[in-house]
Image 1: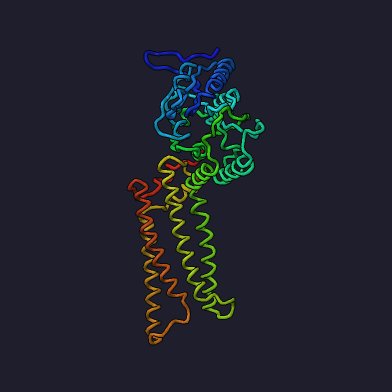
Image 2: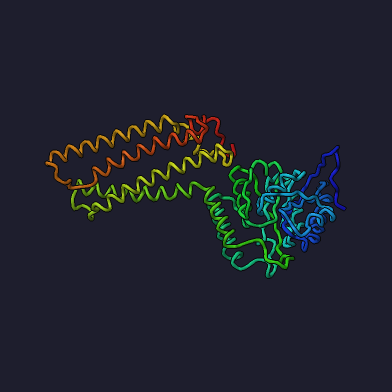
Length: 409
C-alpha cells in the first residue's frame, strides 16, 4: 500500500509528489494513476518515503478532475495553458520535497521513477530518464522524433551547455523541490523539457540519468505534441539561453574576416602590389564586419550579465576576470579614446583632401578606419550605459570580483 500524506491541521505533507499534466485524459488516467500508486508503494518500501499523486489540470472538459479525485489523486487547477505551464503549476502546488513528473497518456511507466527518486535521495538535484537506455516500444515514437528531432536538439543542448544528457526530452524526470524553485522555470510549452535541463546545468546542479521505457500512448485522439512547431520552440529556447553561441560565435567570425580584409587593405596601401588588390568594396565590407562583430560582442556581454544578475547562470572564472575592468567608467573612457582617434584620423584625411586641392583620395582605408573608430566609440559608450542599467544601475557591472564564486570553488 502507498503511504498517504499525513494531515497537520489544514496542511498536508508528503515526501514524494508524482505530477501529471492533464488536459482531457479520462481515457488514460485510470491506468496512469494506478501505475503511479504502484510506483509510490515501491518508493515507500525501498526508501520509507510518503507520497501523493498530483494531477495538474489544464482546463479539462471531459470530467478528468472528478475521475482523478475519485481514484485518489489530488487535482491542482492550472489556468495558464500549455504543457510546461501545467507542470510548473503542479510542481508549485505539490507538497513533496521530491517531484517525479510524467505524462498522463500511459506512455511512461512510473515505476521507472523509483530509481530516479533514489538518485535524488543520494544527493542528485535532477534525474533525467533516458528512453534510449530503457527502451522504446515499436510505434511509441515517430521516426522523425527518434532519428532527427531528439538527437539534433539533445546534441545542440549538450554542445551549448555541456550537460552530457542522452535524452533531454524524456517526459519522465525527477527534481528536488529546492532545485525546482532555484531554476525559476517559466516556459509554457514543450520547451519546458529543455529549460529544466539548461537552467539546472547553468546553476551547477547535479544531474543524474536513469533508464526509462516508452510505450505507445493509450489515447485514441491525436496527441498534443506538434513536432515541427515544438521542435522550433525547443531550438529557439536553446539559442535564447546561449548568448555565447548566438552573439559570441558570429562576433568572432565577423571580427576575424573584417580585420583580415582591413589588414590586407593596409598592406596594399603601404606596399602596393604585395597582395592581391583588396579594393574599395572589400575595404567597406571589412569595416562593416568589424563594427558588427564589436556590437555582437557587446550584446554577448550584456546577455551574460543579465543571466548572472537574474540568477539564471553562475559566474565563471572568466566572468570574475572580466569583473576587474568591466565598468561604466572603463567603457566610457575607451569610447572617448576611440572617438578621439576617429576624429584625429578624419582630421588628417580632411587635411590631405585640402592638400590634394579637393581631389579624390587614392585609398578608402584611412577615412574608413576613422569612421569605424567613431562607430566603435559610440557603441562602447552606449553599451556601457546599457550594461549599467541591466546591472541594476550599478557602475560596476558584475560587482566585486571577490563576490563572484565560480562553480566548484
